[in-house]
Image 1 (cartoon, each protein chain N blue to C red):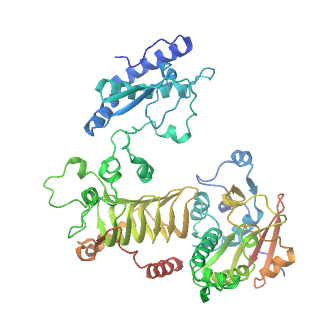
Image 2 (cartoon, rainbow over the protein chains, first blue to last red):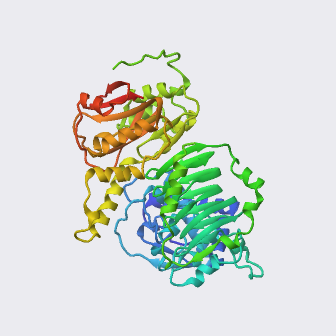
Image 3 (cartoon, rainbow over the protein chains, first blue to last red):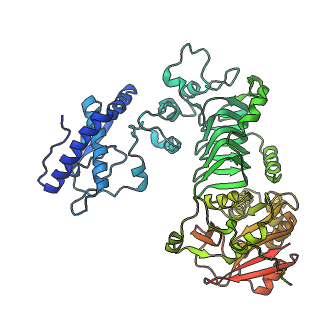
Length: 353
Length: 233
């Protein structure tokens, strides 16, 4: 099934289109990756909207509604990258057409669209799911680092995490329940057999949640709310979302900060500070990535890979269940004392060693 | 004030050569118009090079290349964006004063009080802790009351023999820049939203007065008329 007509009357466009389409067929026969991606879309009950306009007839398909790009305009040079773009777009589009998990919205306009930004190019290899209607109210969902490609991580696409509002605690409880012990998965223990989707998901401290105490575990942790105390994910990755606020020392294999952290960061693999991140405390890691705009107030020290995880193995008592130290409060709870924390952070930062 | 000459054993030491991923090649450096040669940085590195596991305090914005530059040379780097902290402090203070009632004693503030309060929560480091301090575009932006207190604090946290590298404008700058180390002798100026108004232009004598406690100095004047001053404790 051909998704769009072949012939546009423009010989140059038609030739490029046919060539790219043939390339796509060959590519699809070899990899079959688009079928997998489409299957993932259907599994989540999502639909992809494809936009078509006259540029699309020339083979330049806008593959997502939010990323409507069109760089192949009359008069522009057609380069290899255009071929590759069209190839990727058609590979994705044809898969959705074949699986009938799409909605076609015709766009009858000749209006020029703005050329794609660099960031748009970086998202080609990924499928941008149709967002919920209120997805714009959760900017951290789109800013999570390294979003999934063809097999998106449930933690980033599960609507309960993305669209959970502070006023409705039920969806939040799915991702975090104040159980007697904060396990690595943070799932309700009464759940008999967690689905594969859930088992692979990261633990999420959603926006509107405040946690005070020690959090330990082995899986990934995403903090969109507030956390005070100490966080140790010896074999996991900790991500502080743009709205996340952490007043705690964090130990993990990998730490990615987009929000605010007051406390030391110890990573056995790497630390990444996003452009809007604010960190007050020391950073100890073998590798560090600091994006322009990040704010770091503290010292940076390089350690050997895996150096952080070793002491944790020697002190198993630390990773024991921490039922008594965990308190979960809702967003209406007054802010946790800040003077003591500030003094603690200042002392830690001021050690200089 | 005399500069204590230190024999330069190996001027082409590898520590001064651009290495690593964070440093573009010479062509890239030339192509970027915001990159300027910093003789002060070269001298600063030479002075701090002998200290193993030396500690550097960068009072500007944090950049990946700057961090990696010092980390790869075995330094431990502490960063504190002082200009931004000062601006945010003033905003916070202004906000709190707005909420005060008329006649409240707490509303009586002076620049000196603000400076003292600011330093109560900033530049908090142990004494004799750092081997070097980087302060590009900082001192001629600070408040007149804050500047001497900052200098006093820097003198305290600096080890004996430690160096301070600062820059001073010879004319009012057209824009506010942050500084990023490209390699051992080049820095890149990153245009940034203005965090503070350029307060004044210091004459050479005034610069020496500011660094009154420091024992020796060296000044480099760049083509852009920015003076880089290097002082030793």
